[in-house]
View 1: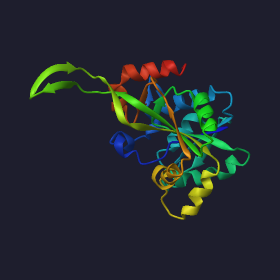
View 2 (view 1 turned 90 degrees about the vertical axis):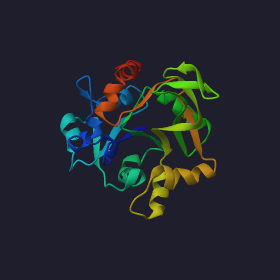
View 3 (view 1 turned 45 degrees about the horizontal axis):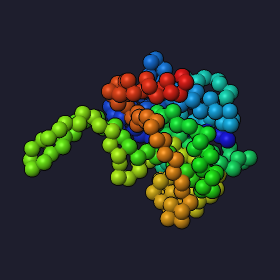
Length: 238
């Protein structure tokens, strides 16, 4: 299996930082965030190759410069054609593969990729998405009765009404053909492709249960969640 890291995009949520470096290069303990993702993926023996998609003609060139001439990582130029459209560039890389892992670079999580792969196969699904059903809130909550606060709940763990989707996917190679059929300039993987497949019952979910997750869109988010980030990296074995 090959792992694809999507490290392109405009990084709108990470501005003004992403005007100077891509979110993939957000620093954690002196190393760029993407390096933790790459090393974690390589810790699974069934992942034979890591491919990074980014805009190497722009800020993404910093990623390529960081890794230099390493032969165990392949770099593919993106085309700013959406999360689905950019996958068209890896078609030939998947020639001898039946499925692949897709990891959005700003996701930090020590997800058990092996178990996720098992769920993907057991459900015989076209796609499997990492999800979670509970979240530790960043603000305080209160129990209110008749306008009177009875009790405070400081940053509680909340059970979500809907499952929250993480940016970690397991996909069949045939997804490329479905993207091609769209024949549109911008293809959003979730809304243009997976939405249709979900209505056919072909998209499964892998719940990360008690595993922590951070949507690391900027250095500010990483700093604010420093303890959590440190815990996740430790869970990754890095």
